[in-house]
Length: 191
Image (cartoon, rainbow, N blue to C red; front, side):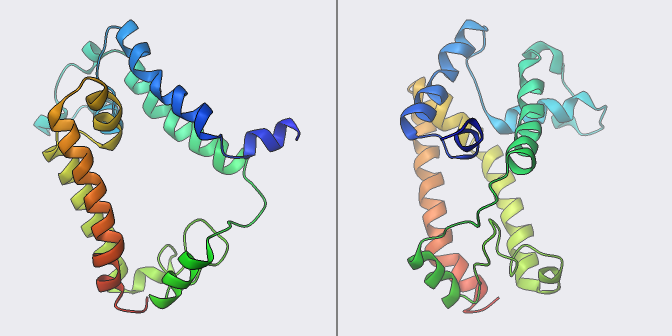
């Protein structure tokens, strides 16, 4: 296995898990104890002057690592998706392909099925309902829960916060409900 193969292959759980776990001790060394994508993106939005009270605070007081993290998400997505892209088509389990086909969504070898994620799909009002409704629910849920999945699952659980445990259980239950109940209802057997 060459270096390119090692970079374009998923990291095994026994490497990725401990690296994620080291996030909390690293933050404690930096003098911070909270980590989360939604809070990092909030700090990035607060850099730009705004009339929205939610974004009007001293973002410099939280440290620059949040901004570096938010920029790293974009840079990492570019590096992983463009520079180190795997030329092989996505392999999806046969059972998942069959379940999606029953909903009218063809797995076409890409990460995002074109029936849901393409310019042509935007003519379907169900796709708009999924995009707008899902975006609203994710944003509302992250604010209502006081943070996002990464913040609660990584920082909150490691700090033994009961609200984080409740939030993480809620995230999983919501994901399962969406996958098994709402998505089939929204797609109605065909997209």
